[in-house]
Image (cartoon, rainbow, N blue to C red):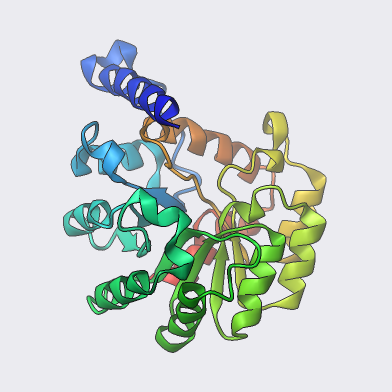
Length: 281
């Protein structure tokens, strides 16, 4: 809603002023020395451009100990601004939304397919997404073509969808690669387990999944799932509104709290190793 976006921008502005006024007003820096993070879910979209420069974004990533990230934006220009500053650090993912209006229509829109194919010709993108996909939409023109592009060009589809939606997307092509945003948001560890067992081409990022470690204590079901699939999970944040950017150091400090409760090798894989294996060229 418009009022929610205005409130988010106001909060982000207040926090940003706190970052630049002086040391006394700055948030405590996260301890970043133990687990450098490869974040697989960041956006630098148009509503953030008036609040943060591309240099500001990289500085916030520094504070949070995020040394590399998958970035997509609405429109794509935000991602390209960051990529131009540091192409080794920013891994571009192409969002199919030219404007926010595309969010509700992209699956049926052939012009979105043309737009994506034209942009992919730049040769810099490692995937398509993050896109929002509802149950029953995978059979439409754009998702079908994106599954083909994933297989043909070795691209990841970063899909924000539920368990049924991701199963439908996986069914389009067995060789398409899916990065499941938010671990399905509300999907249980048991549901995620079943889907990972079904497809070797499904990976999971954990943006907004506070149930992984409620109150900072790692949930035993999640811990068991990480141990069962040590190469399939990654960290994500989702800066879906501008106010999420100044929160990045605190959010990553929370992530490191539960990472420290895992065996070191497994924690390193989730923090960065799995993403490095998949996305670092």
